[in-house]
Amino acid sequence: MEDAFGLSSEFVGLRNFTDVLEDPEYVSTVLFTLFFSVMVTLFSLSLALLLAVQVNEVLTGAGVYKTFLMWAYAIAPPAAGLVGSLLFSPLMGDLYNGINALGFDFNHTRDGSDAIFVVVLISVWKQLSINFIFFLSGLQGIPASVQEAARIDCPGSIKRFWTVTFPLLAPTTFFLLVINTTYAFFETFGVIDLTTRGGPAGSTTTLVYKIYQDGFLGADLGGSAAQSVILMLFVICLTIIQFRYVDKKVHY
Image (cartoon, rainbow, N blue to C red; front, side, top):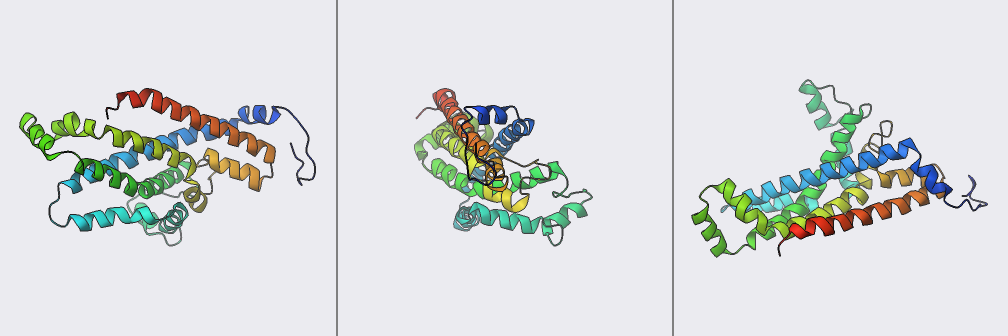
């Protein structure tokens, strides 16, 4: 543990870890991070799969659709956060004005639920393009003979998708599940910093952003380092669970 000015340090054993784990604010941050990760992963994968299936069946102008859906891949998370902060700005944001014009009392600067909606929406939009690219590649990699046989056995498009197409996309889906979870945990810092800064009242503070707040803004280097170790162990455990239980349901 270091003093506030970083001039001296004292060995305190595991005290930094116990302080972090006993902090109710840290527990709330863990719960929000899990919720945020599930929402971002679920919506970004679902929407990307839906768009990829629709575009895969388009015969005319497919290149235009692909270009519009892929261009967001080139945008860095901080840039996406900046775009989102402008769109939801209470002073001039088009989305902010549009939502309030519909009758909602929307203000992400004072309402935690609204702030969560904003960071999830921008994070999903940023990740949608890369998921779309992988799903579209997976769909176009299914042999035409398999698709023809599926059309004969399953005339219904919805049943054919869930019984034939989706199982064949399982390797792609599992890969995207891992990288989307990692993205939600680590790469959404720029989005949160430029839109809500973890507020209001810590309602959108993720584990990575709390490490930044405590370490760089609060000068609690010991506590911040302990949080970093806990986060690393948490992600390792989550990845092991994914490979141990989800990977068994994937057939390559």
